[in-house]
Image 1: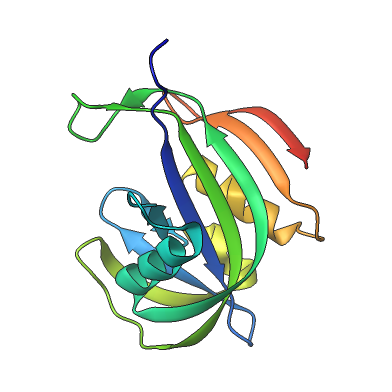
Image 2: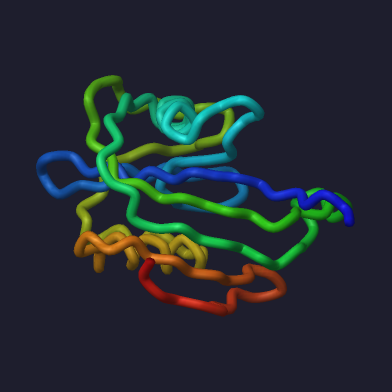
Amino acid sequence: MEMPTHIIAVGGIVEDGEGNILLVKTHHGGWVFPGGQVEVGENLMDALAREVKEESGIDIQISNLIGVYSNTGIHKWYDGVTDVPTKLMLDYICDPVGGELSTSDETSEVQWVKKEKVLDLISAPAIRTRYKAYLDFLGEIKYMEYVTHPEFALQQDRTI
């Protein structure tokens, strides 16, 4: 048996005390909430705090796990050659605790957006679906399986 290869990623839906959500505009994915891949030897919490800080300049405190998501479709990376394996993503609600908005090598814009206006900016179906799970969060963790290529298709949607 071949050992499986998965990408583990974390996402942070950072909400300030005034009902605004932190969004970053990436070079490849458009507007998203910040997050990214967990590095070898790194724990989930440290990875999320690092990714949010790197992409937005904001320091966070992580409060709740809201969703676990599997992208089980294998597709080509932006280079058109490299296979992107199965991806497991975990999304958390976060509170800002410091820092200042700033862009990075990965982001071209960073801003606070009214919670009800976020979906006006996010175009990627998977990110929209995960943000809607945040809007519907009542304390139960969401599990979804989907594929993003050749087009977005939700395979499974339930609470765990």
